[in-house]
Length: 112
Image 1 (cartoon, rainbow, N blue to C red):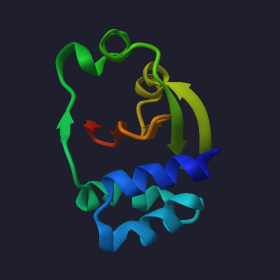
Image 2 (spheres, rainbow, N blue to C red):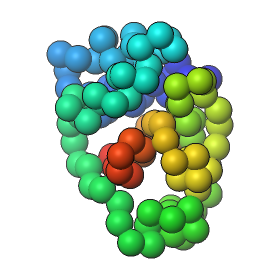
Image 3 (cartoon, rainbow, N blue to C red):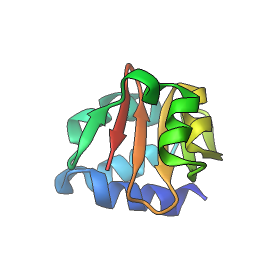
């Protein structure tokens, strides 16, 4: 479940020279926490912190609907909607279509 989602994410959002390293580290629990924390340094593409009503679970659902994806957290991965990801408050959520992700660390960062 997480393998294909991670590959989509890395190909779209991680700078070329860090893709293999980020993919390897996010694929296993050993280095996942520190990799999630340092991930903003290695991102490319459009990104914007979510604010106002978009930060709330109801607001994000109003904006994007019941978009499905995979939520990667330190302990593992699960399939959730974008709303469920915001409710979880931490981790990396990757939309099934691979063109959108949410990174939830000290802020809520939308990647497109």
